Length: 396
Ligand SMILES: NC(=O)c1ccc[n+]([C@@H]2O[C@H](COP(=O)([O-])OP(=O)(O)OC[C@H]3O[C@@H](n4cnc5c(N)ncnc54)[C@H](OP(=O)(O)O)[C@@H]3O)[C@@H](O)[C@H]2O)c1
Image 1 (cartoon, helix red, strand yellow):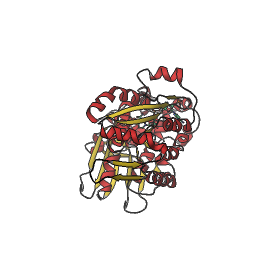
Image 2 (tube, protein in one colour; image 1 turned 90 degrees about the vertical axis):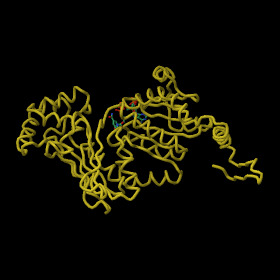
Image 3 (cartoon, protein in one colour; image 1 turned 45 degrees about the vertical axis):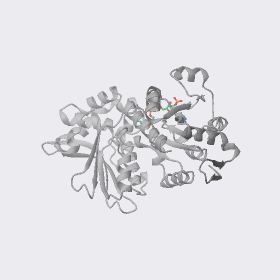
């Protein structure tokens, strides 16, 4: 940040006083602006599993085109998993997996901050593709060290509300951004849409939808035919739609978290405990290992068969999140539950493992804005994270 800025009457000279430690960084930024050199965005990526690994590949594949079209040079100077860190001033390349294996070192976050300082790296973005709560605790250090944040990890937005507020205060103080479009609906443009509607003064009155790809697939298939629930659940597991322990999906907690994130976008001060969640796992199967659970699936068959039979004709089952109540107040009502809806309704029409979200507002009246499409999967999620990176890169 400049300490003093001065330009002469002739308009030919500009003088800038900066701290010595900011000198190289300031020169980099000015040279970039004056000589039309691409703007360099320095990325530190955390997590290279399903989403993170796909993101690295997507960045490496698109970097040249982005530089040509937008004048933005994406440089991945740090890549880390829970144990190892790979640093490269010029950016990691196609051989990143081998490099990580061979050159990855033990690390602390301070090593990354020090590397960025030593090499005068500007336009820093930290990208969280982990599912780690421990990593989230480090967000404040990133912000204090000049990083913007992008995250597919939902944890920072679903901890207690005072943490949520404190993080935003810190971001404001340091003029940093935090984007997390993929937290709800993966690559679907949901959070940004809701944010803009809310910011522009539109009165959002209800948000309702199928938020879970795995539960979408399970109930869409279950409602179509007469297969037992257990057969469909096993098929969903085999297709990799569920978490390794499918009870994490069936508990409804993940849908609850997504609904909470949306509620907080509307400035509601809800906590996770406020959500009324219909847990689809019978109490006797909630404890113990996955194997034991999978052996007892006939119990679920009976339970869901009853649900299927008691519906009105032409109706289908959907597991939905519903944010409603007076959303102008401090807290909204958050319900996560199994419902029976007409087959021809928007929710009833959803297919495959798609997500569908209806946004009701005063201007849209009885006809909600509907956002629908693949709401899970590494490729679409990584693409959504990539979008957030570019949004910050273009603005910053
Ligand atoms: N898949 C989807 O459809 C989807 C959609 C929306 C959001 N998300 C979110 O995306 C995130 C990533 O999901 P994923 O499926 O890619 O998970 P994953 O395959 O399990 O990968 C997680 C990665 O994070 C690393 N990691 C864990 N703790 C870390 C720490 N403290 N510091 C640095 N790295 C750490 C892991 O490294 P190690 O190997 O060393 O443990 C691994 O590389 C999750 O938060 C998930 O909820 C996923």
